[in-house]
Image 1 (cartoon, rainbow, N blue to C red):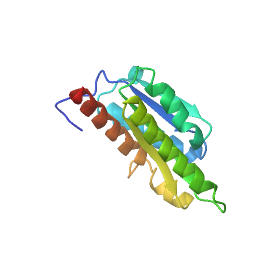
Image 2: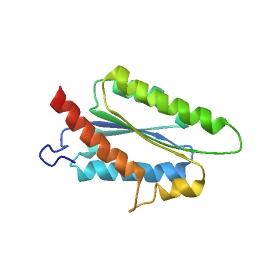
Image 3: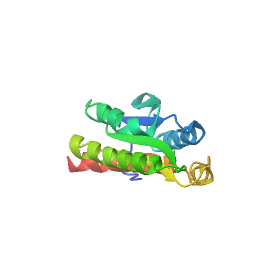
Image 4: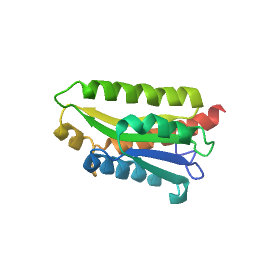
Length: 151
């Protein structure tokens, strides 16, 4: 993170899918930890929980177009099963999140795990370890700072 440009005063929206909640709750904790470490105040973070990953782009778009946020963090966990459902959902969520960023002009961070197994998802959401939610929080701060500098 750019220490010359503190994150204090920046506003973040966090979208969390509650499907696979054991994993996504740890992703959320990691993202919040990263934001706090960067100096973001609790009042400057809005968390919106929704049922599944497929709904993430719509809610991210609502937040991004509200004009209230410097960046949006999207968190979820799509774990491969026995049907092609995984392929459809993961592709649509990735496409939708990217589309929201491009159409809104607001940084939208893809913190959605797409793993083959629950063990892989757990390894990427472990508290105090390599947590992809934390990494998404760091990326959101960096992109919000960059976006402000480029404006």
